[in-house]
Structures are given as structure tokens and as C-alpha cells.
Amino acid sequence: MAMSLPAAAPPTSALSPARRWSLLFTVAAGLLLVTLDNSVLYTALPTLASELHASDSQQLWIINAYPLVMAGLLLGAGTLGDRIGHRRMFLIGLSAFGAASLVAAFSQSAGQLIGARAALAVGAAAMMPATLALIGLTFHEERERNIAIAIWGSVAIIGAALGPIIGGVLLARFWWGSVFLVNVPVVVLTFIATLALAPKGVPDGSRRWDFASSLLALAALSGLVLGIKSVIAAPPAWITAAIAAGVASIAAAAFVRRQRVLPYPLLDVAIFRNPAFLCGTLAAVFTLFALAGLQLVTTQRFQLVAGFTPLQAGLLVSVAALGSLPSALFGGMFLHRVGLRPLISGGLACGALGVAVVALGFAHGLGWAITGMAVTGVGMGATISVASTAIIGNAPADRAGMASSVEEVAYEFGGLLAVAVLGSLAAALYTAFLPADAALPAAAREGIGQALQAVGTPAPQWLDAVHAAYDRAYQWVLVVISVALAIGAMLTALLLRSGPGGREAAPVAVH
Image (cartoon, rainbow, N blue to C red; front, side, top):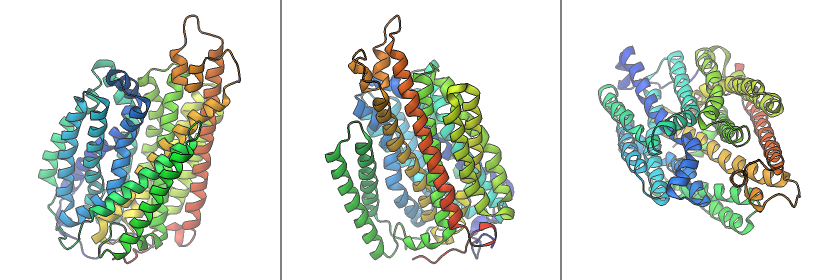
């Protein structure tokens, strides 16, 4: 079955091809900013911690405040875009993002930076659904829209991979605030281009925006992430985990109950009855879980154990982005011929193979890690290019904002899980794999960062044990990522087992 398109094209169908593609690259610039800020601090965090005297807890929130607030607000932002217009929503998000970038760049304390990161997330949450909704409402020919969404997905991957590289380059030449200040000129240019290119659209004032639902979603996600981190921590914080799980459960139940009584819910669960829509959502979660997790633990391992500079580590993980570009573009071009199943399920399976190559081969040479990264990128590119198409193409045209928000929440949730689960798991496994040696200093058991700070000249004999423990932890984290991708491949293959080639199903009716 061919992708379901709007029955009647809205006014955006009058846009010329040049204007359509110019608009695509304009919203892609906004998307690039959002995804860059998700990963740019991986290399900048040690400098930030030193300059702002941030505690371990504050460092955690400097990283997590951005994706957490964004994921909690995305559903509401998409529905608000349906109400006031996605062009206006995109411009509001750009303005908020630019202002927050200035505040972040000149923050004088860790607390101020955490607040600025949360404000950045508010702007990003306004922009993200609008980018994909504008594409869905602008491109109506099936193949053209598939290519446009594939380019959009490629930009998301590139932004995530370029974050550590850009952070490393800027830190080598400028002060730490430059990683945020660089956003401002891009915001200004994108704002001007959006005013010139994007059609105003037709807002639907009858759709109400429910802020309470957004707060409930944020509370549920926050509790879930905190609970996971508390369980995996070494040692586990069971009381904190229980409280967080309780908050998450209550907030989630209240959110679902509220959606059932709202005339225009932020999330209508009926839309998940469409197998292609559900498959696209799951694929987005698994893809970002793998990419964010692989990027996080790999940059740390090669800096802390192999002695890479931040820029060198960033270049290594960028190999995955380079591998994803061809498959992402070809996936969008040939979706109409092969369908969703080979690209989504096959892409996840290819990603699982690539991560396994890194896990089994990194100790035998850098070439194995590079090869595995490239293979992972090929698989993730194929998946991410059509996961977005599966979501947007299987939602009613008047709920483009809601569908876009679901897609973005899926990506942000995957990234959040990666940081919460894999970051904590790596630290816990490192501690577990350390030998019970009295000669090992107490600092070494607190974390590999503390262990390296305790190293003097000449290097002590226990340093080899520290490196070996971290390498084992890194390897097992990669195994977890590979297994997760394999499970994702099987689940999506089952969901798309019906229909010719796993092509899109017709949109289901929602409120």
C-alpha cells in the first residue's frame, strides 16, 4: 500500500520547487542546532566542571536538563503548533533558543548554566515538531517527501555526531562559552530565512493546548530517568529509585487518564494501533539509544584509556555519521519500492552487527573500531531515514504536529535512556571489574576520572588494572547496545510482517 497523503493539499502546495527545498534546508538548520546542543557538551563537560566548580550532581544536570525538559514538553509543543501554526511556533522556538544560548554562554555559575540549558530545551521543544510538520505540510508528492524526510533525518544524525567535534575545536581555540555562543548567528540567519520562505499556514484555533498534560509528561519522564539511574548506580540508591518510580507511575497514570477526557489530547493512543506508526516510533527509540550510547561511552573510553584528545575522540564517533549519509539518502529514495520492513528492521540488524564489531575488535586495533562505527552508521542511516516517514505518513494531516511530537519524543527518550542506562552501567561495571587489591587507591574505586587524577610520575602499576576494568565495562556496554538493536530488529520485523514489503498502512482515525 502506498503512503497515505492528505486528501486535499493545503496552501503550501503552491510553493515552487526552489522554495520548497530552500525551506527544507532552513528548517534543517534549526534542527542542526537542536541536535548539536544534545551532544556538544560531551567534550566540553570537563572544562565546564573546572571553570564553574560544578559538583558531580551539577555536571549530571548540566547534561540532562536539556534532553529531559525537551522530551517532557515536546508533545505539548506539537499540539500548540497545530493551534497557532507551525511557522509561528518555529520562529518562537528560534527566538527562545537564541536568547538562552546567550545566557548559557555567559553563565557565572553551574546553577545558572543548568537553568539556561533548561531554557534552551524550551526553545528546542518548540522548534523540533515544527521542523518535521512544515516538511510534512510542504511536500505532498510521495517520493519527494520521502527524500525530504531522509535529508531531515540525515541532518539529525550529523548534528549529533558533530557535537563532540565542534566542542573540541572551539575549546581548543576559545573559552567554553563559545560552544553556546556559536548558536546565535545561525539563529539569526535561520529566523530571516524562515520569514522569507515559510508559508503562514492555517492555524486551527479550535484545538486547545493543555499545559497540565505537558507537566505530567515531564514528571513521568523525570521520575523514570532518575529511577533508572538510581537502580544502576554503584551502590544502588533503592529509596530514591522507589520514590522516583512512584512519581513516574502516578504522573504517567494521570497523563493517560487526562488524555482520555480531553477533546483534543496531546497524545491520542489510538494512533499507535497503526503498525507502521508504532514501528516508526520504536525504531526512533532504538536508533537514538544506540547512537547516543555508542557516542557517549566511546568518546569517554578513547579519551580516558587511549589518551585521545576531545577532538580525536569526536572524529572517531563521526565515522558513524559518515556511514549513515548514503544509506539515509538511498533509504528515502527507494522506500516506495522496497517498503519499510527491509529498511527499518534490516537497518537495526546492520547496526547490531556494527556495534558487535566494535565490541569484539576495538582491543585489537583502531581499524576494527572504525569499521564497526561505519557499519553501525549504515544501518542507523537506513532506519532513521524511513522511521520519520513511517510516523508522519501514517498520521492524519490535521495532526501533523502531534505526530511530529511523538517522533521527537521517541528520539529524545532514546537518548535519555542511553545516558541514564549506559552511562550509569559503565560506571557500575568499572567498579565491579576492579581487582580487590589493597594497593589500589580509594580514588580509583570512585571512578576512572578520579583514578587518573591520582596518577603521578612515573605511572603506578595499578593503572593497568584501572584501564583493563574500564575496557571490560566498555565492552559489555557495547554488548548491551548490540543486543538492544537486535531486539529492535525482531520487534519491528514482527510489526511489519503483514502487507506487501511492510509498506505503510492507512492512517487511523484520531480525535
